[in-house]
Image 1 (spheres, rainbow, N blue to C red):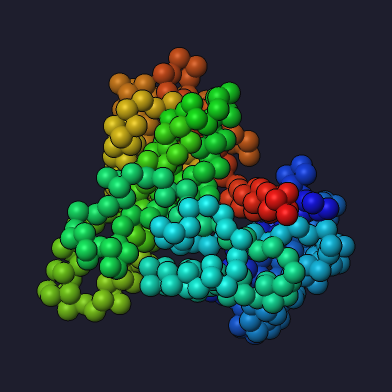
Image 2: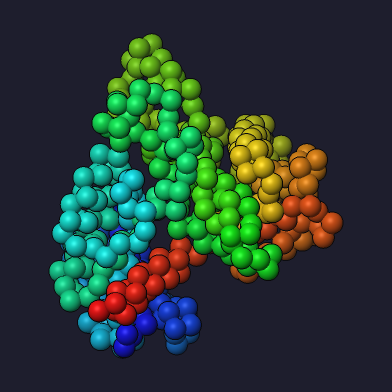
Length: 406
């Protein structure tokens, strides 16, 4: 290969997040965000990281994703890093749902596009936006390898006993109903980084990963392979989240429809956008919830307690699934920054070999670190996630293999 640069694109319905990385040393050359695409007040914020320059911001109408990527390319070109640069080796795309079919990063062709489109019914909010970004990037650089990295891929190693729901098999297969899991690039990166923090190979380590952001998920990783995860057919299942309910008796849905007279769309909105922390106390920002708790707010305290109760249940469940655990790793916005969440989640689990050192837990930083005392049988770690680096790493590894085989 003549170049080691990879552009990572994360396309949402009205936004594009991007990072340009040089995989020769995993350094970031540039990063940015285009938001409110399709509006008169679209905004592009671009940061040239390789020079340490100040961020640039532009506001104005950006009609669609094609215009957004052209604007991104123009900003990159100002730093001699344009989308048309011969130094660009590939574009890596985050794709939320890959179903059972996509278990690895995949070079995108028309067949791959068709399969991602076929999965829209199980990812109606995410896959259409991901497809738009892919098609736009392919049109702008048809000569360049484009790679899809799937959120679900890391979880395809789950055994059927973990991935299957206990419903009629023919019905489940016909409608592709099973546990897929999400946040896979984060779980893959963090589980591997945790092993490195312990000075071991990932194949030697069992890790419980807790990805706690506005969306939240847990995974049980045995020897570098996911054996269970909390999110299911959709990102709604599992932990209590910012606006999502997490685990729920399915009969609640029937009750709300029959007794509450709510439509399917109304229930969907309730469970995905008006539940979780925001439904319990009116806030989905853990910092604000903790401020209210410290002031004696009982509603905020109850929301926090419910959040921790569910989190603690999953730690215990995945400890049982793994049998032996080497580490519990906290990551993402809440996991990396909320010391009170980490302390409360581990409190009372001393018989499992888990403990948190209060002084270490209070330290803030952007590097992986242990927060458990040296005498603890199981390590407790804070590992900042890096999904963009994971996507770029997988993309570059695949493109490199393809080049070498040609």
